[in-house]
Amino acid sequence: MKSTQRVSDLKTMSPDQLQEELLSLKKEQFNLRFQRATGQLENTSRVTEVRKDIARVKTMQRQKAQKA
Image (tube, rainbow, N blue to C red):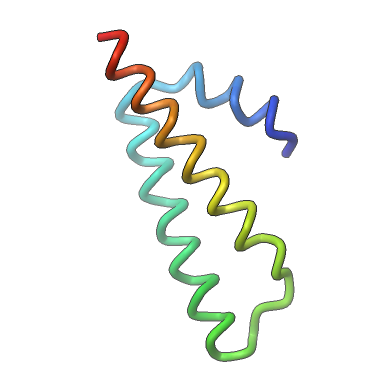
């Protein structure tokens, strides 16, 4: 998914939805780290994508908190 699409999707989410998204991304990041450690990771670029998505979600959470 392109980052501009991703950002527009995140802007429409509520704070609770953003928190759920952050939780699922962190779980995915943990699983990817585990796969890398055991040598089972095939798509290494996904680690970077997930890390950037986590940053995007945290940024949106902070912006929404400051507006409120």
